[in-house]
Amino acid sequence: MESKPTCQSNDDYLVIHRESALGPGSDILIRRKAPGADIACVYRKAPGDQEIKGAQDADYVLGLAGRFLVMDRGTGPSRKLVLWDIPANKAALALDYDDSVPVKVEPTVITFSEITGPATAKTCARWKDVTKDGLTAVLAVNTRITVPALTRSHTGATRCIAQQ
Image (cartoon, rainbow, N blue to C red; front, side, top):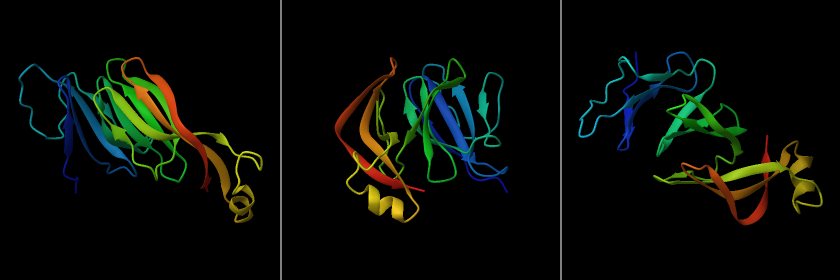
């Protein structure tokens, strides 16, 4: 049985997504909106729609920021934040992020906790405790991406977190 679709929209696009029947992730339709159009939230592909299916990547819709669809990608603890450029029909950015910190999607800004790389004993006070349990210590920092330019800035201190 197909799951009930969920919709998100802005002035230019309607995104219709549902749980994938093929495995983890979502089936996603992106439809261009005509000014003033009222489009039903029904998952049925129409001419001109973009379709992103979860067979290759487990993508989950987080929101719309201008012309970018913001998605969470992955099935395990190492996740990617993907910014899908709708007009180009491809990923514009795919960044490692800490999915335990909520992603905030606004019309012109996306805020999230970006994983910037591995931690070491010098960069992580908790490194020994984290690694003794078989986990990996990584560095994360709060990040803001402004759209449409995709300008990235880090805010706040870098922190050390544990990952599988």
